Image (cartoon, rainbow, N blue to C red; front, side, top):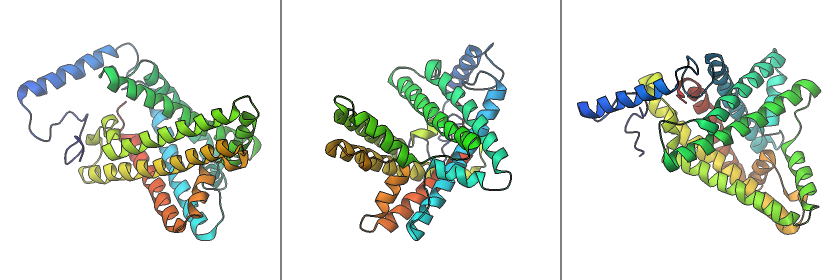
Amino acid sequence: MSASSEYPDRGSGRSDGGSSAGEAASRVADRARTELSGLGRRSGEGEAPHRAVELLGRVGIVGYGLVHVLIGVLAVQVAIQGNGQADQQGALATIAGEPFGFAAIVVVVVGLVAFAIWQGLAAATGFRWTSGRERLQKRVGAGAKAIAVLALAVVGVRLLVTGSSGSSAGGSQETTAGLLALPGGQVIVGLIGLVVIVIACATGYTGIARNFSDDLDYSRLPRRLRRPVEILGVVGHVARAVAFAVVGVLFGIAALHADPAQASGLDGALKTLAGQPYGVVLLILVALGFAAFGVFTIAEARARRI
């Protein structure tokens, strides 16, 4: 159980255990200082430079969540039927194939760019309400999320311009082949795999420790949904960690054998899972985890406070 208590209201301005008047006054003072530090920057909240960026960013979070729900659906399709592209590209292509899909992709891309700006500013100068190692970790996390959502926005733009979202596996293999051709290429690819595994571990820890709750104001959600949303966050982060770990291992194998065909993105990682003993069951569990992360992220669009 995390420090978020039975109902995770961290950041909501409430105390579940009943704090003293002095502690309550201290929290009010801290919040006042935070708000005063933001005067002149914008009328919204958190690190977004303008209220419009915040609102568009929240739309982007919803789009990010929807993509993960679709990845989960596509992964189940891979597990059961053995076909489909279970990654961001496949999810966006699925959206584009629906009525009004083009307009939906445009909205998602604009929202993702706005959210990336929001998180980029948070990475550069944000999280002034904390300090030290915790602030550094949060800024690094915000920067990583900015890069991730920008990458997804680029996939969306490619889909809008060319009509094709590409393939994560093909892109990974082409990039790996180019890196392996460089002096020390195997070491470089191996380091990439190691970095991805570290990210997987950090993602898993974030889920297990429920650190994601630090960035949410659960009071914005109906009380009956607060605990389910937190559980979805735990399950979703752990499932993504498993998928990232497989991607990292595949890059490591590619480095060891100097074979770019071994490297793969998310789609290839999920299909690798499916090929293992009891792989169909494992893949379905990971797929449900991705869907859980997507639903959590959609809820996050309302509850996120930074």
